[in-house]
Amino acid sequence: MSASKVKVSIPFDSLVETVSKLSLENKYQLWQLLEEQIAEQDATVRAEIQEARDAYQSGDYLTIQDYASKYHKKS
Image (cartoon, rainbow, N blue to C red; front, side, top):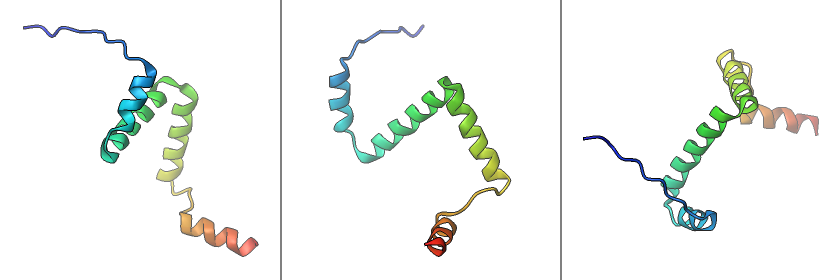
């Protein structure tokens, strides 16, 4: 048995209304899915994500505590 595909056109306003009714957990899941799809489709975003991952892997990052401490000392 083969799977059939059905195209559905949902008005954007209806989509927004439906998303607003999702649980917080489902909103986070949708957010992650959208971020992944945007990153896959946008070469600049893909490059920025890879750059951030590379920096993290090499230890080239500040924790929020380190950043706050450093910024606080300059004030």
